[in-house]
Length: 151
Length: 422
Ligand SMILES: Cc1ncc(COP(=O)(O)O)c(C=O)c1O
Image 1 (tube, chains in turn blue, purple):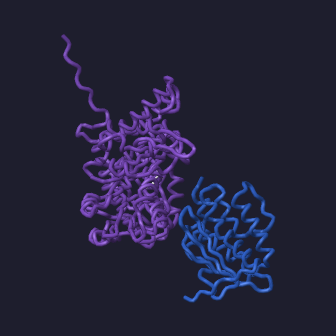
Image 2 (tube, helix red, strand yellow; image 1 turned 30 degrees about the vertical axis):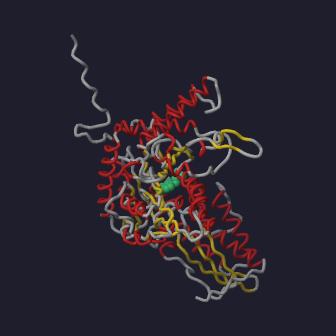
Image 3 (tube, protein in one colour; image 1 turned 90 degrees about the vertical axis):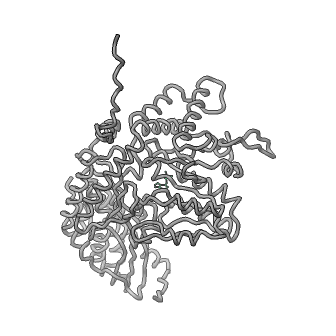
């Protein structure tokens, strides 16, 4: 298989210039994700308004796949309602893991990440940001709020 | 009368007495396979080395002719298995030049060997206020067991600093070696950086203060001559699977006087002489530290790996790997944006590096697609990564079967990485 199936131009572009990179202070929800395989970590901060994800920022260290995935996710979920985000989360998970998955939603650019299916060692890299987003929203739904950073 | 037969030429040496790595490769069946349609280039021997046919055949022969439990049967198979298992212990003794076979304890690997010392020795010898001195470049296997032992005793774990090249700051180390130091534990060779540590000076300084020294020999044992009497270390730990033997077998060498004073750390069969419900009397060394049925097949494989390494010639293998290290270091250093991590003067054939703008994980995937196996990540040595401000590196490591052709493939693979990320 051609390695460019994994490293498509859109992925390399998002890796080189990640969108929505940074931190929201203050934020309404946050979560930290780890990939123990490579020691990478990803932090997400979110702002929510009227059950919509109005803003999202991420930062951390990661490989091209995890940075591009987080950057593309941030674009895809900005402005979406929480049920829409949840539906995307499920679709993307299927895209990364199920062969020949036919998406039930338009995934747009995110389809470019489908190449990870053929690289099982890299599925975790692509899905880390989505799992972290999911965790942040669940914690928010459970009433947890970010601890205010004084730095 | 016939002339006496000419001495058979050593198949593993060329005319100049150097290792014929191409001949060595022929002994390793796995090196014949392809990965993603390309002949495998295996540059991850520091994580785990491959097994030569001699080792595979030794374990198969044992399983097909003599397998039984050891130390407990009067029947023929049990006697044969016991004899082979104890012969393996003697092979290890000879290989590292221990004084007695009773100083050789079989474990699952380096990790278990260090845990044994930290638990048994640490459990009785460490007290509140004591210190265990390690270094910043240790593998987690030589950090976490000491953290546990220190936490249990109220002792402190202290790490000696490194130079920018990845060498031990010997002066700072000697200052940290103080009246509270009860144990010094350090790598013989670093798995993340390749550094060979100045163990002779460390051991001499520690012994001047009466402090025992444990060497984590996981990365040294297959790559240089190891003589525990000459080193004068008190404990030496290593794993079979990093010296061409199977997984699941390793060794703790311990100085007899220290081992004698140590209590058992696991209880069960084989480690006792007699058991009543109220009380047990423990077996002699080394069996006192080998509770339960041991990895008999692994020990036999380890002995076969020792014979194999000796047939290749340990010094010849070391010289071969050093040649490859020099060659690969020079060629990698010339790649734009490539930074070598760990440039100690004395190194084993381990090269850690980063490439500007490309995460090591991506390097690993692209090289894998070219059939080249390297390690990427923190190498189970997170403190040393943090020390140099890195989350991960890419690491190529060599073994007796590595060749210049492997280095050429690696360079071509890295060129491909640079193309994809151009
Ligand atoms: C320096 C060092 N110490 C300890 C270990 C642990 O060895 P094992 O996993 O075989 O117990 C390793 C293996 O990666 C190592 O490189």
